[in-house]
Image 1: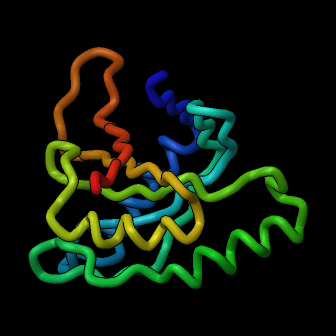
Image 2 (image 1 turned 30 degrees about the vertical axis):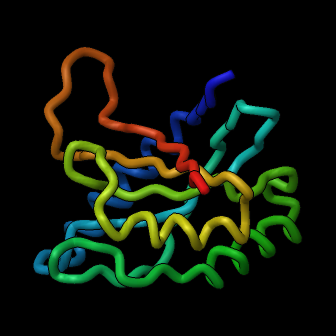
Length: 147
């Protein structure tokens, strides 16, 4: 069975909001943003119920140099202690990329999420892409390592 990813509408709005606020607040900085996807997983079906932004360092070329994984773990712990999405877990992460394709250093960032989920997803979006109809400029990637 192939992977099925269901994304709550509020999550799509959160991605757009995160990108828009970042661009307005940091006019001369990179326009790259990163965050976490959380929700539930039953077999090969992921239900993304929420997102949150994660502090990161982006280099001049737009590549992610550093992501604060401790922040992610601490935030999820607080959410569970407060019974906020108690059943949720980290499902993966998101970032904006041109044409919704992963960039060269994204694999390194992705590896950091294996501590939180044995098979995290990587969701990319392109807020600059022109779309037709009801298509959304979003892709989800499942990365498999071959030994």
